[in-house]
Figure (tube, rainbow, N blue to C red):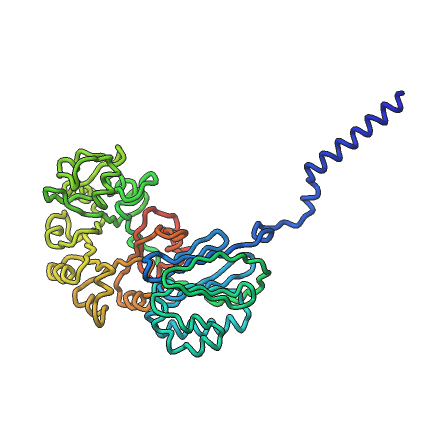
Length: 429
């Protein structure tokens, strides 16, 4: 009986061990080569092409990374291990870009590279002369692309697939094949620059406790401590004509829970606290703060009356005004006011833009970082002329934060409007 009992216990033990091994096969997992999620599952590429008619941004998403693209045609080259590179060619406005697009496309097709193409805004204007070449490459629909049409192409299945639509196209493609083309078609352009504190402007006073665009005294105080010395403030008027710092009245009302009519009076504005904590700024508050911080410079936004504001500010030598019309720029020049020309009037200047800026003693420009790839030639001209270009729209697109601008775009442009200070700003990597 004791022997049978012992055998029974042994059988139970074996069964228990077997059960545990099935449920928790630890040693089997340890002997399996490590793999990334991308190796175990098919990756997907999502293409979203919008024509000019939709007034929406075109994007692509791959390996959980989304990129917003510029006007023209963008090539997305897929590489091993779910890596990718991409480049946008302004095939609407640049003949040089069209030639470069055709050249690299020919190489990629010859190399049997895995890639996709998508259009944004208007992409066809300069393609006409290359219609025969595009047909030869097998891009039949691209050769016949009309202005303001959406377009998507890919060769994920080994054959060219194209789509055209007057408004937009969205397609998600499963990347279920081994990609082995390691060729770099779009080598990263690195621009040398020397780190300098004046490359960074605290956008709307800078971020405070994760909140952006407060234009508050607390934001100025906090970001001064972090290292900023250039501070942008949005300047707008109350209902009784007083200048104050706020991005716009609807945003200010949300920030303060103000429920009265907009714009408020100056007295009503001064009674409010942003999120109940942060102090609003009128001209007296702005002047007091800058008087107490003699190494700080104010950069204005929204206001387009340079003479009146310069006369109201405590120190015209520490004032740079972003201006929004050629007339305002010329008026500021006559009065010796430091001027930053905004993107719209800059691009609207006919003829030699650099000469106009030099004649009017304009030393700064503000443009969206979204346009600099398509305006690279102009950016280089301004840089070489000593005109400092600052980019806004930092943090507007996924992954395009202060660190991205620092690593990839400074040097082509001089500086950025930053919501937050990053350590990398102190010294070049």
